[in-house]
Length: 166
Image (cartoon, rainbow, N blue to C red; front, side, top):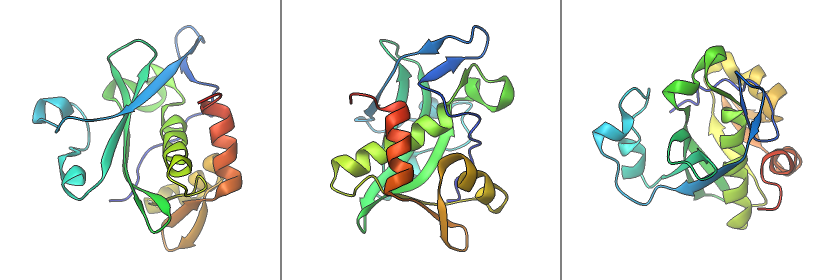
């Protein structure tokens, strides 16, 4: 599935749009099967991606149970292969509650890649109109039509920004 998330800003964590305050975050792998109600209001239903062997990682504010975004990935061919990336409905667009969700989700993919011996490398297929955006915002490289990779140097920058000390 083509990745379709706008990277609004690289932030040190998530930033509350109303107050400008940085908010500490945490993430965890979803360890229970998804139910339809878990995706009410979301663009994608991650049950299909889970059925294809992808794991869902969810982003939260520290000590909070509200999902701020999800990324679906699996380790394959020496990289973290991303299927779906999505901000929570309350974070969509330039009026969303928190800035930095999209890039933070890609940083999670880089961390999972690194933890699995893949040097932080992340691959994904982009929607055509976002290829240049991902090159500029994430440092991704197009290696085939619409197929993008975040290599080690760009992954390191995302990890330094979002995963300090993790």
